Length: 394
Image 1: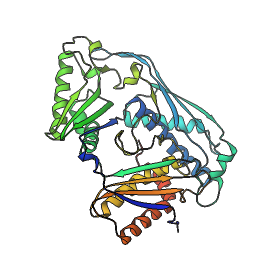
Image 2: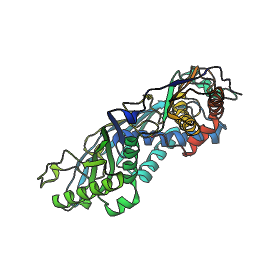
Image 3: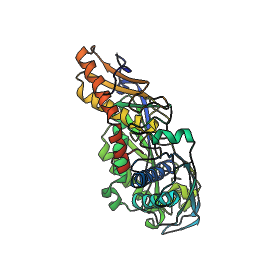
Image 4: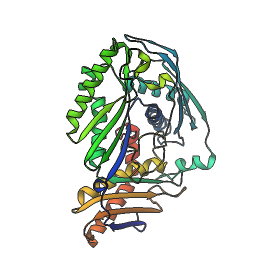
């Protein structure tokens, strides 16, 4: 049984974020250069985890959370343009050798499958360059131990619940932009989009950068007509208090492609935009400057022993679970801190901060501690969920 000695529960009465006068939050879509990097290395980490389970019956030491996307060049044209320089993705990290094959081959295939499945990209548009080497011997040991893995970093994870109204609308807009309903109606929509939301009082506004695919746009009038229709569609699903504006850089009277957000592939990376792991969404799909959050690059990290990954996922799960179970709570924040070399289920600190109007009873505090302990004990099962791809991390 996990010890509850380092599980601290506190109560505060600070008003939740919804009561603040202003708020900002952001979401980077699946084709944004930073999210593209996150998605690629997470797909590679899942594939490498499965390969280690097949070869060794346990996940071995690796980390693939360093990746850089170098943008290409293109010439968008109404009706269809061309790529003039391909994009290139460098994936760097320490890995353990495989018995059954090459880690480089596993990574290249996983990234290629991710690009084809998630972004509908043709093979070869992005060159994948793995840059791998063995990890430090002392770090290799954390995965080699029997039983519960040891933390391979001194790091922390943080999560909160519930989401604010603005955060929910930003995520809803993201889901709409990915939806088959919208994309069937507007095939010109690319997968590269960024949603910046802000709230002043009760009024919310979303400013969206949304790439259009040139072969589905015959001229400037078609572009502006489709853009206006997309804005109307999104606004109709987000409520009257929320307004939407797409592609604010467009020249209002443009007649040429250069004045519009037009692409060949639906990605800004084809036009020189670079991307990097860890610069995008946190584990809940948002970038939230008004919230407590970790700056860890979760995507690509080892799902068995890297607490920078495990603790961030678990902290959000615990915060939501505790909030749902606790009458009178306005917000719940969970912070988990590891120590390198310690068992992953034995953090240095597990802090649960509850914002509530009343004090917590001893029974409520006990229930929270037990819930945290249960979550920590279940980390190996969470590892398997992440390898199976049932836990989105970017």
